[in-house]
Length: 102
Image (tube, rainbow, N blue to C red):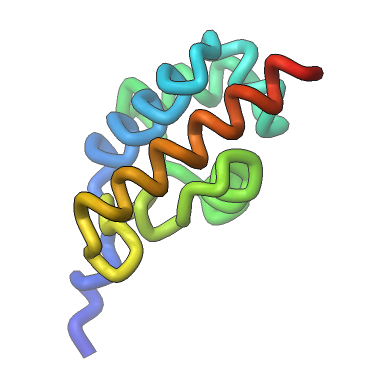
């Protein structure tokens, strides 16, 4: 089995997490509190100074509805690119709407 297939790039993960956070219109402290981590942890993650744990990946995935495959590898479910991008955008918009009601 090719183990490299399951490796993720820290910088690319950082960029995806930052893009998710920014699409939710959250600051680092707001996002960190929302997913149960410190602002310092999110700052280091977004700057590529630390990797993402399985627990953090799960927290982001559960809160946003975005798959862990996308967070870690940039792979959209079933590689349905345009359709999946629309689905991700829809899920992010729904998350934003839910936040506005809280």
